[in-house]
Image (tube, rainbow over all chains, first blue to last red; front, side, top):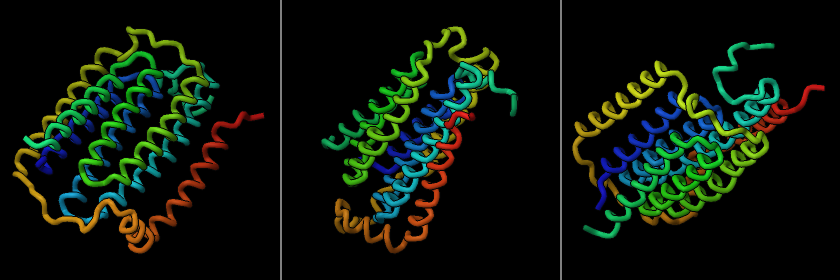
Length: 100
Length: 167
């Protein structure tokens, strides 16, 4: 029997990897992928909590998180395409001005 | 040890390894494909957690829809391979980022170790039933469900407006 704590530790490790990716990488697409890793770590916590508390609510929340993740990916990638059209680069350090 | 303990460690190791490689990969294409591997491992963990419907949804929506969107954009932009020297930004940023991530990992692990072992609080009647999920989703969470439709509409309009070429 795997305990709730094991799932929480696994989720914490995945979340830290996602955080490290956001801080370390200089590529907008990889930043968005790191955010997806973090969202999935939180999803794992929700499902494990729902399982160990004996309710189905954890799974319902995950459906909403998935929807928000899909919306975020669509809008984020649209912004990436618009930025790339202006600057021909994916390095976020190149996008320092709000208008040009 | 029982079978589910082995599976937990196997799937957890795959998820962690794939996630580390996503962050360390130079080619964004490989990053996206490795993230799909990580999501598949998480889907396996959902099966272990008695949520098979969620596991299938994870594969269809994350692996099938969101990641294909990412792949599409990576191929559309045809991004050149990153310069290895610039892969992780400046050295100051890198050190600060690594320090913050390690601090977060230590803090979370420390907090979880203080928590003490938590066992099963209750057993779901029949967790795998889609009927139960549907009933709760469309009764207790009906407002959130309807609000989600507005969110998707906003995201749809926003994405089209943002990616459109100004003429």
